[in-house]
Length: 106
Image 1: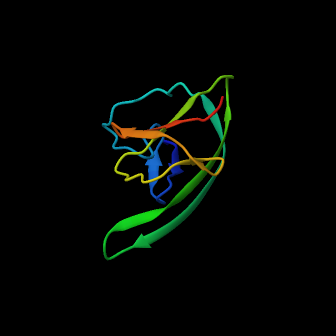
Image 2 (image 1 turned 90 degrees about the vertical axis):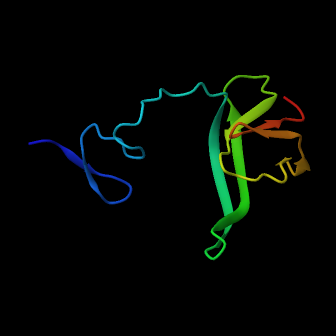
């Protein structure tokens, strides 16, 4: 009998099936990381009529290696208007579905 497990959407799937992608989607290995995500706080507003989500994400990170000068995050299909680090405005670039934040100090 094949083994099954419950996915995040409550559907039963066979062992080896992909939980968040189509079964024919290519496999991707883990990316190199420069930090550990310690905490994520989201404050969001959902507008069903406009089909939008707006809000603030507050991340607490710890560097894996010393000397970290920037943080790169996935940010596909997002409009980023402002970035702060420790409560102060920070320089950032939003290109190719990634948000790169320049840190004011190591």
